[in-house]
Image 1 (cartoon, helix red, strand yellow):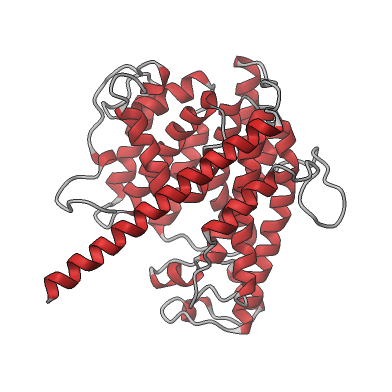
Image 2: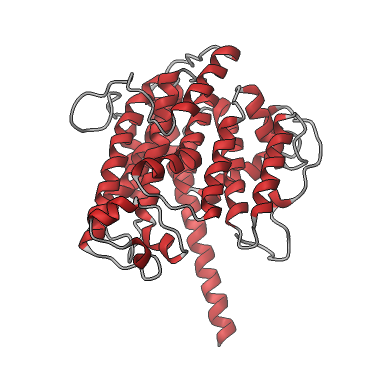
Length: 388
C-alpha cells in the first residue's frame, strides 16, 4: 500500500447508496475510468499490457472488473486490516448486487459489469473466500487444496473475464478457470521466498514431506535446496497442465479477444521458464521477465497455434473443469445461459490492423518505461542532494 498511512483504505469506507452510472461509470471527467485503469497498471503491468489489445467494448469492463479485484486485494493485504475489513468488503459486494453501490468509482463500475454480464454473486464471493484463506493463514496439505485457493483468488477472475467477453458456456468457462489456476500456481512458484518471509506457505505440504522438507521448520528460516527445487518444479508442471487446457480454450472466445488473452497466457507462462532458468530457486531470487521479452511474446501470440501450447497429446476441450472450480463454472454457465446469448464477436482484425495495434502499444510501453526510469533517476538525484 502507498500513500498517507493515516488515510483509510478506499474500500474500508462504509457503503453509500448510489445508482450505477452508465458506461461502467466512465462518464463526465472520466474519473471512474482513470481509477480502474490506474488499478490495473499498478497491480499488474503484464495484465495491463495484454488488456490494451482488447477491443474497447471489452477493455473498459475488464478494467472495472480488475479494479474491484485489485482494490479488494489491497484492502485485505493492508497491515491495518483485520476481519472487519473483509466483512466490509462483503457489505460492499451486497450493495453492488442490490444496485446501490458505494459512491466510489470502482464500486460504480463493477456494479454495471455484474449487471450487464450476468455474473452470479457466487463468483466474486469466491474471490473474497480466497482472501479469507490468506487472512486465516490457511494450511494447504495437498495440491487439491492449493487449487481450491487458486480457484478463489484467480479462476474466479478468469470466469468473470470470459463472461465479460461474451463466452459463458461450460467449456469456455472451464478453460478460463484453468488459465486462472495456472497463473496462480505460477505466482506461488515465483514467490516462495517472499511468501515464507511473510509467514505464508502455499506449497502443498504433502509434496514438501515427500521431498524431505519440514514445512514448519522452513517457514521461519526459508532457504533454497535441491529438494525445494523439486517441489517448485512439480508445481510448475501442474501449472503447465492447466496452461495447455486454458490456452486451447482461447478459441472459445470472440475472435477480437483472443490475442489479448493469448498474450497474457504466454507472458505469465514465461515466468515459469525464468524460474527454471535460475534452477527453480525462488527463495533467493524472484523471477522477472524483461520488457523486451514480454513484447516479443506479444508479437508471437499473433501466430500461436490455436490448438494449445506444446506438450504431450491433443487437448480435448470437453475435459471437465478442475474439481476445485467445477461448482463455480457450473453456476456461472447456468446463469449465463438464462440471461444472455453467447457472443460470436466481430471478425478477427486484419493482420495489418493487429500489427498497428501492437506497434502502438510497444511505443506506449516504451514511453512509460522511459518516464519511470526518468522518475527514478530524479528521485536518486534528490536523495543524493539531500544527503550531501
